[in-house]
Image (tube, rainbow, N blue to C red; front, side, top):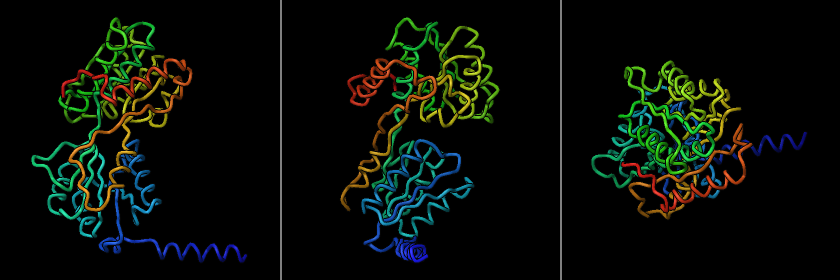
Length: 331
């Protein structure tokens, strides 16, 4: 019983010593917060939170919090409140935060902001760093892998509306990557043209398009674009095609495709954020930084891929990241 009593009092002591938001205005207390919506949980949020936790353990941060904002209408209010509390670093995760992040960053120049997967403001802000996601490279990796796996020499790219830059770049990259790996592979490609009210949510179109391409002989299907793309991948897997994705580890995100999953190309931001936070106080940060590349662990059907092919894809990843191979996709 003495041990448990000691453990109880130690827990209370540690809780009392842990910083709160009220401590953040003190110069010796460095605080950071990740603001995100529940639906943004995934690769970027996990890597960002890992970087913040590692920085806290290393003593670079005294306080680190992940705050879930459930109502999109609360974005600016939450950003402003965090800045008013003296939070040193505020991180947001997706294009949906872009306008509010830039507006609050402009109003609170003493705070520093990291914005992932967002476009630059009309005028650069000294306290805002944009982390750009290389969608063209992610798509290129997926296309190259698809071309190396297909038996029919027909692969398919099913994509959301092409006026969305990230979608267009990812699908352009897929086509270029497939051609790079095998010039004799034919790529079916289609962007959704339906109602903007169904943007990223047109599951019916995604399933119908996957069914069409599989019937036309595509045995590897790539899709990108929220629930639209997820529905396409699930339908393709149901019809015994292999599937491949980007940005999220599909093994975790889409359990229904696991047995037909050959791989997923992911952005790597954890090391980049860690390097930014390790900079000495007062050191300027870049206006933009480009995320790295990584492969999700090869699981599902991907576990059976030959080691030589996995090594080939890893080499291609390194060459893209180093710039020795270009995707050929116009920005």
